[in-house]
Image 1: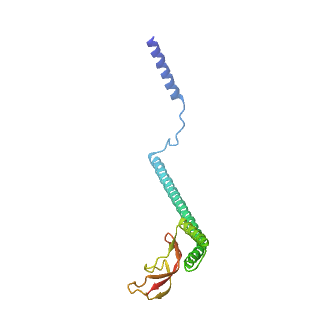
Image 2: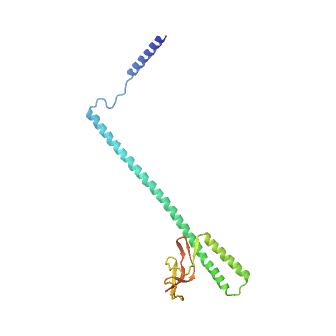
Image 3: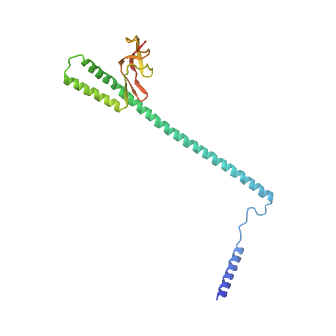
Length: 196
């Protein structure tokens, strides 16, 4: 039985081999070409591959440049938005600085006058609330006396000889009007009198 089975399998193999051989192979475009012709075709294909690779590399470079430009644009927009926000914030707060200064002057003047205590407490509460709002927004007061004059923070109104000879030259003698800054940015320079 196994011999019969093997014979049947062999016959099937022979038939499938013959069928495959009988099927016509499509003609190759390279049939009948000599070696020089094939070499020329290979060289043309290599050149075409090189050109395509060059085009792919150029497209990749262009894509990377566009991606970098987009990232730079995003960073620039983010930075611009931040600057616009900080400028608008500083501008809005600047309008309230003179009110805060007026409240401080009122409190200083009330020390020399006979003022109702309840009224004075109310003005003090409003002044403290202004100070809290300014601190909340990162606003710092520039009101130090005895520090060196700094053109980035101070606006000199005049120079004056100090009463105390031990006081160094080009230092702040008196603050005429407080200055304010947010971080490193000066919103309003302090108006000062500077020692000679």
